Each structure stands twice: as structure tokens, then as C-alpha cells.
Length: 109
Image (tube, rainbow, N blue to C red; front, side, top):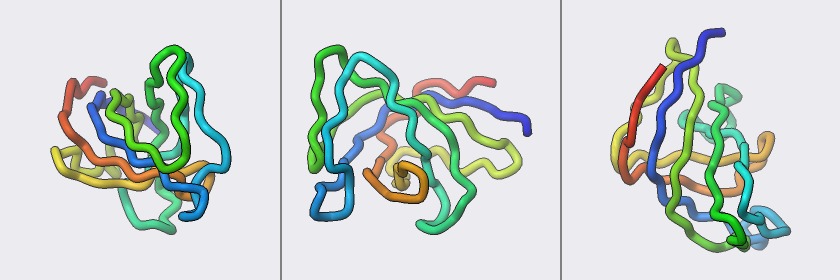
């Protein structure tokens, strides 16, 4: 399957544990690589992507951050990457966050 990449600046609201999100925080200094679902909540057509977390940053369930993301996607199923677009961020099939595109930084192949 061929893939293309796109870089985005996004606002990410991590679901609280009570909302069914993560039970533990994320630690910065590495790329967090969950699934990105731009389709329907139960759709299995998900994109792979990495979320950049600052060194030393601790992101708790229920927090909202703004950061850069790289998304890998199948160009035959390309979602619309437009400012304001929302999507689900999932670990496997479990939604753990909601993303909103703030800026398209650089589409590249």
C-alpha cells in the first residue's frame, strides 16, 4: 500500500479516564504513535501518525495540548486535511483523544 505524509499543527484533547480515555499520563521526549481515525468512530480505515511531545512534558488524561503531528495515509482514501477538521485519536480501537487541525504545515510525499 503506497503512503503519503502530511504535517499538521493540531489541538489535541485527551479524554479523561472517566470519559473512557487513558488511565496513565504520556511522557514527553518521544513520538507517541496512536491511530488517527478521520472517518467514522468504528471505521477500521485509520491512518498512522506520530504526535510530538516536548522533552519533560507530562500529558495527563483530560488535558488539551497544541503540537505538531505527522500523518501517514493511503492516498486512495485521503481524508480532507483542512483547518477545523476534527478526528479521533485511538489506541487500537479505543478512542483516547480528539484532534482538531489548526494549520496544515507541509504536505509531502
